Image (cartoon, rainbow, N blue to C red; front, side):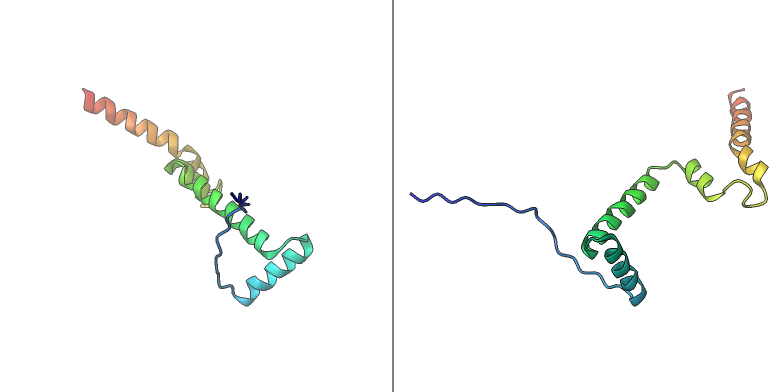
Length: 100
C-alpha cells in the first residue's frame, strides 16, 4: 500500500487591484527602500487600515464627536469642552421635571 504525504502551504487568496500611476510609484519606492515585496506592503497596509476602521466602529458617538471637533478648532472650544457637562445638566433637569 502506498502512503502519500501531503504538504499544505499557507492558503493565500489572489486579489487584483487597480492603482493609479502615483500610487504605484509610491508603492514601488516603498518596497525598494524597505527591502520587501509590494505584496507584503499591500497586505500589511490593508491589515492596519482595516484594524483602524474596526477600532473607529467601536467608538461611542461622544468619542467620534470629540475626535472630529478638536480643542479650539471650531472657535467654540469652551463650549465643546463643556458640552458633555452641559448635556448632562440639561438631561438631569429634565429627569427631575418628568419625575415630579
